[in-house]
Image (cartoon, rainbow, N blue to C red; front, side):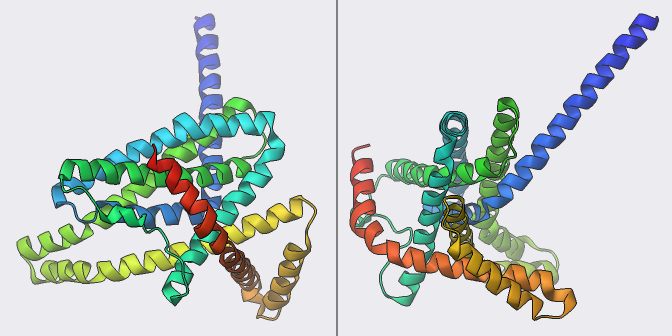
Length: 323
């Protein structure tokens, strides 16, 4: 009997350790995922365009198809590549992060430039894409494939940022944490995309079937609000890309020994924050730093637009045109 009790005690101890490990993985994954906010919001803002023009009954199947592709991108390709680099070439993480940050800045600046009418095409497709095949099945296949390719770029940014934010630990803890980040972010992004895409249909159903005037009114409000929600999401996503991208590049410069931009921004943010009332110092300092990081990201992105549009984008399209 005493042996059985001892065994049960050991099992309980193992269960506690396992539970603590799971808690650690989830906690670290949440923190690491939050660092990739800019790319995550951009992912959620970009994906709905790939289901535009399809019948309502095909929207969710297309989103599910893209989500499955995103899981494969993150878990099958990017996770092992990221872990291998982290363990065998850790020196590469900072440059890769800076490249990802610069890409976020380029994307954000391109959207700003497009709005201002001074160039930039955002996430528009190649001009040849206007010649879409008329067969709905072929069109759906092409749209889903394009979305999964775009997701691969954004997922690479997310996974690299998250990997850099994970505290140094054992190989398996890092792998489990990065896998948790991949799953949590993919579920969150494509769950949000599904809700955004179907919000109009929900609103119309409430208008058509609502028994109460308040239900029908709420449905009409949802339908009218969705264009503004999409516009707000685009603005927030662009600002987040510039902020996160700029801060990544600035931090990378500090790691590589070029700390002047980061120190200057820190000093200015400190002065602004401490010029405010005592209760607003921390928020003021954070807001000032985020704004300055974003402005740095915007300037960097504007400088990269000619390089991206004349060199990188044509090369990328040529490569994938053969895929």
